[in-house]
Length: 307
Ligand SMILES: *[C@@H]1O[C@H](CO)[C@@H](O)[C@H](O)[C@H]1NC(C)=O
Ligand SMILES: *[C@@H]1O[C@H](CO)[C@@H](O)[C@H](O)[C@H]1NC(C)=O
Image (cartoon, rainbow, N blue to C red; front, side):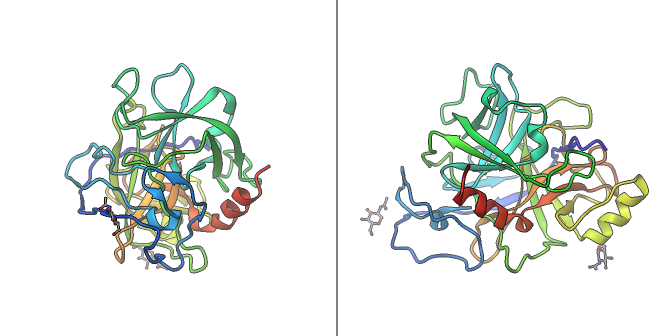
């Protein structure tokens, strides 16, 4: 199977967001029951603030109406690059001041010591590097222990530990993890996927961060669509796409986020990781994502007991 992830990128979207976060202090009441957050306090530009008080909220007010993402709209987006190469080969998502979630298949045949993770990036045509962007080394990568390669595509999730620790800013913030006890399916909801991947199957990669909105499918409808093509969607996966095609993730977007903004408090949740697809943006062929709320316990355990 070509898991190669053909994921995405995204063509169009409309995002109206009027978030603005004024004053963050440690006296704010904890937010959102059920959302998984990490309480690893750390000093950063915003003060000494627990992660659950700040995750998922861009500090940048934005109104978007085009294809290109607004800079800083998704300050948790990470670009995984090979030293010496220009565009990222995969994406990832910052979930704390030390950890990025990505896809296991991104690390196939790659040595972590030859990779860099760039945060705060938007436009790779700015050379040598954008003002707000910072490169981090990888202290370790943990692929899910049950990931067995691209044959099934299951368990396609990995954790990256960065070094040094990340300092948060307007350009670099963590996203929130989704609730894992209730495990909503998100079927029927609109989600946003973002990345620097190809803008068409076998096309060129994008230098600027792109985003697109896609609808989440339920797994039975997704299996009905993909089974005739010989693919199977498991409970650890989720599907999203436009039934008419034309909007999807594609190669190079792998490992990047599928995000949903909570209506209750406007925070963004990492609900999926770009994993695989059959081509890109074909009609009735949704992209397939690792279903993050199935893996939150693994993420928590891995982070608490790093090896
Ligand atoms: C945030 O709130 C604190 C306490 O109310 C206040 O002292 C501080 O000046 C505020 N900071 C900003 C940037 O508004
Ligand atoms: C799954 O989605 C399809 C298409 O939207 C719908 O017809 C079907 O009823 C849904 N199935 C379940 C179990 O929700």
